[in-house]
Length: 432
Image (cartoon, rainbow, N blue to C red; front, top):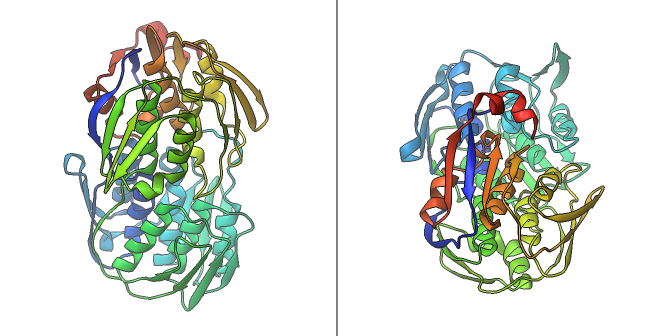
């Protein structure tokens, strides 16, 4: 647990302009993909978040030469010196996307030994579709002392995913890009960061076609070069800031967006009565009156993203009427609502469905961020609430948001870090 808490003095409108950071989900795939390259690569527009810091340490552990400049949002990686194919559990358990090291190392070297991935506790999150794809490409898979060991000379194959899987689509795409022959992936996920990862692979010499559709075709190659690449803006950060602007009944312009990536959220905000306009790479959000309750169902892209369900739930706690939120992707993604009840929110959870009854006002309270997006939702609730909210375990938030406090502060929020006293430091503040 971090040695600080976030303190939010709520009830203030967000106003002004801010810049959206580079995409977390894209970066966590593109940085491991650098291991497939045959020459140095430079990745631009990287967010300065904790998960990137973990990847930086993993690459150095593997023997790659890495220079990371968070202030310049840039990482230079020379993978030619890699001398280890093992990612210890001490690294892998710190982030969910550590599983991309499997596809990258297996594709490049024919072997990978990676500890089981960690990340947020959102219920069952199996990687069976990843492993199914690796096995179809010719890898043998063993579980040795808590490590996943993959080995084999890969050959192209036709692989149909049993379910739509973002991580599985990317991971198998990484491995197949270096396999011998042609690979066809069907029932693929279509998220923007899958397209961006494919674009990076093509930049360094891969031959990937169809990313962004449900069928991806890959012609494997034995040689790849290097080069520079700029990752796309962060779809989820943009959405979180859009929701925060609406939640505080503010007026905020977000620069560096891709509006088409935000269409599912924009449609729901408009349905609630929020004004959303876009021009080029700028999205403006404005709300001057109460907002309406809605029915929300998370889906794979281009549907409403599960990563924005929790921030959106915070906004719905003050909507006029009762909203229904259906979580179709993860089985345990309503823990934040338990915390928001401490702030006066009214919600009834039944499995994957939450009914949220809007209340006139939230009040500040101490709350615990049990996961990344849930933590962001609690920050939004704190911005809406009257009085002071203390968010404990904010390290989960820094895993996925770059300088969220300073961005919100620049828009008029009163949010700061405060040190924990000894009793609060003991046992996660007894989980409040």
